[in-house]
Image (cartoon, rainbow, N blue to C red):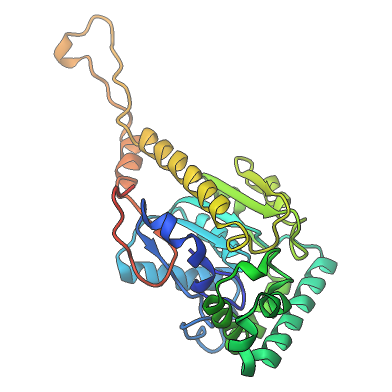
Amino acid sequence: MLHGVGESVVGWRPVHDALSKDYDVIAIDLPGFGHSPGLPAGVAPTAAALADAVEDELDRLGVAQFHVAGYSLGARVALELATRCRTCSVIAIAPDGLGTPLERVYQAAALMGGRALARLLAPIATPVAATGAGRSLFFAMERSRPWQLPAADAGQLLLDFARAPGYSETVQAAMFDVPTRLERITCPVLVMQGTADPLVSMQSPRFLTFICHAQLRWLPGLSHVPISDDPRLVASLMLRFLKTATEKREHDRRPPPQLTIPGQPADHDAVRASPQHGEIVRQVTDDGALAGLPGTASPAPPRR
């Protein structure tokens, strides 16, 4: 799972336990956020560059194929990963990247305003996060029920916003970064979008123009980061989609049916699919992990 700009894997904690019951869950802090160092000097933090870094980390962990979920910036990176034919499915919560010029300016201004507020509140992060009113003060822009965030998580996320070395550069890069090759995505895609999102609510439906088979699920009354607003709903939608995507994948990789040629002896009448089709089947036999949560892999019975 991949987090949004300014945040870290902490943002996924409300649904971690529910997902880890059935899947191995991997959390990755994007470069320049959380505990991850920034990208090398001279490399702009575009979605493609961030996806490269995620792939490198998954390669290091020995993960060839995987389900991937992300919110905000993480959703945009997840969709970029899906263009590279390694993802089994994608869950994109409030993805950005298809905004108009005016929407991009507004989004960048709102995010930089959030950064300024985080730096102002950072010296008193613990007392601010200790109360529902304090949590609402900072997180109301992107969460419709910010008081539901656990105090410890809220304090850490506030500090993540204030201290992330890649924050400004990533926001600037996102102003001009436009997704490409979305038509190459063939895996199942679920887009979830809160109806009360002040940042990108109009962008999510636009992805369906380029990913025709994608599903869009509106989340009534929820905001940009709905994970802590209604973790039970978000987790249930994710698990339902993952189950369906896994079943489809298992069905698609079954051996093709045999064809009977009239007049041929029984020993020789089985005609298999073409070598090209068989090669595709072999390429997708390895089960993937769920790219996501807190930097550790949790064993999950049964593995899907």
